[in-house]
Image (cartoon, rainbow, N blue to C red; front, side):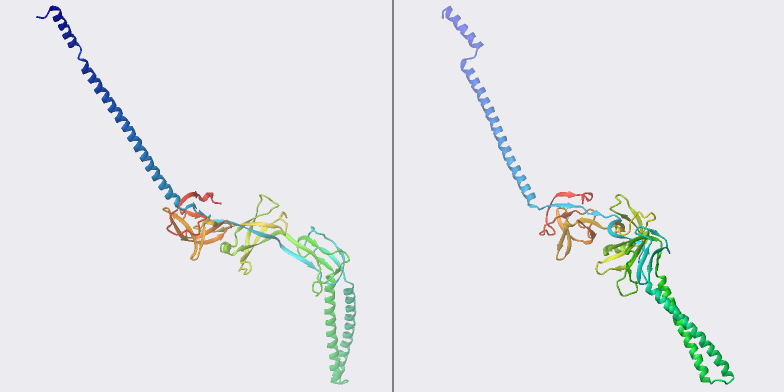
Length: 414
């Protein structure tokens, strides 16, 4: 038998053992828990590393794809395009015009002499039949006096020959004279009669020349030039010597404006059209005229059609000889378009433009119309929704892929 104290001690030890596990079991549990944590951390690290690796690979692949796309895009030629601008039904053209009076005339002398007096200077308004100037013609006056004297002599001879003829006729009836004498008397009478008529004609001619001493206005108008003065030698307009135009008279109540229209617009020019005139001395103001006639002929030298526009000028506001800009609204074809001139391609097969369709170039034949300098009219070969390449390279061909970098609307085209 164990002593009582030893038994008690064993009992207490057994109780302690039941209450707390042996120390070696707790160490194993802790080791297992620590091992699981290590694996979790390792797994997390591996996942992070894998994620970083995948992200790096994906970013490289994306960058490579983007680079290839950008490289392919950059390899395409870049072009700028514009949409054709449709022209208006009536196109206004501006042409230079010369303003001239409806009636204008230089006034020449019809007789030789010296200017005695003039009555009107430049700017004077004269009426038809008013006396403008008087010319002294002493030679004509002397010739007229001589012609009158000759006429009187011829009339006296005619009267005497008439008496002689009548007398011989009476004597012939009584057989007092021969038939020959009567015929001679009758012939002398007829000759003297012809001399009188000739002298009368000469007198009338000299009287007409004498009447030309006075210069009259041929129509109502304004004296625009006076090219002579008192005492000047005047040569008649009918002589072969240098002619002296004494005055210039113009009728400015209605003006004629002559315009040379280029041949390409000639088919749109019709009699009865209205035209507006603008002059530098009247800024912002327009004067309306009417197209009254055309030459119906293209000048082979200038390739233009001459037209006349009449403008009423009752107050004399417009001065004759002025330079005017004539605005004409010429009808155009409704299907025509305007393009910048730098969109044209001059090829051996003809005029072409480059049109972008589905990213590819299509070279299209076009028919040009009027040339406006920086723009040109296209009458055939274009549609309103076409995208036309501006400044196309000479090497461009149909079917070539291009990229559009700038598109211009029709309203933005200058």
